[in-house]
Length: 452
Image (tube, rainbow, N blue to C red; front, side, top):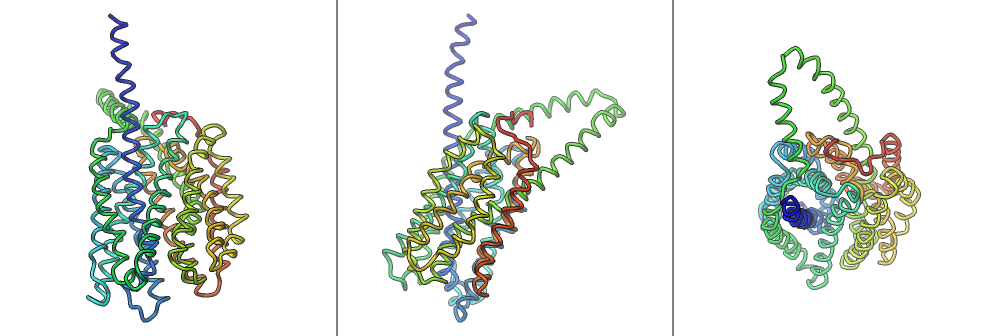
């Protein structure tokens, strides 16, 4: 009888593994589309600048558009904390569904938004409000996806599984550049400026609704269920203990736990600073720089950047698997050293020729892919389950908002002042911060997240 019972349980375990893989696919597919919508704004920044701001001063209009891009990032910490708190209390799935719906709505709103020529400055105001909404949703989405994928992954393959999150990030950006390349190739420059720039946002909103349909069947994280069950059991036991005993037994550990979480947050902010600055410099600004500063044809810049990102994308699982073997810290430190060495040379090699952007972007993005593949695992492994999503949402979003979201704006500002070398120096300084944080971190490869 016992053997029959065991035999009946085996399919359940197999089904559970298959269900986790389906959940991984659904969460990552939705993340691809979220990042597509987010990246489409940066890719079409020159056209949005002309449509939504005063075109009498093109440089000012471009800076204003990139500033709106940064404003969206500044909303991410708030979204990370609010949705992170929701995810830690009510589960990861509900947040992933909610943020997907908000991003889809924001994308469709941009697609039908009146231009500056139609309603004046109100067009700029509406654009800011929509980007703030998307930034708020994106902060919750990113934190929850990092948490969710790490929690459903096998602990010995968490680096590999976690790398899929950055595959989604690159995948969304690749999709945005592919659509941009198609639009600028098929349509004339005047048609793109007049109405063609809206196409990516219509497409993004519709595809996001399809991803939302898939996410409804995702299963909840077992780590989350285990933490909630443990917390409930602890509450029941605590109810039987005298109040004095509760104070002496529980207060001090809570304080130590709080200080450990605070330290981890500060380390994660510093660790992510160089990663996110390098990432957004080479995914969101490099093509804009080639078009506006070097005179490269827009369709050439878009297609070349897409190819560079595809090259980096295929390396992500390899970096994830390698981290499962040799650890997270040495690979993070290796990224810092490499990016410090190549930042300025890669910036200076870009000309109006497409191949220069291809070589520079591909090299930079393959290096960025090293820590990108590890982020989900490293972030999740450094926080306890009870506050994991909220802590990741705050630490990651703060770092991305301060150092990543501002990178395209700062790069454009430096170049407008003929101080382009500062773009590379900015990334280099932040990569030093990443290296220092990684030296201070403990190795977390293979830990059990239920015990974290």
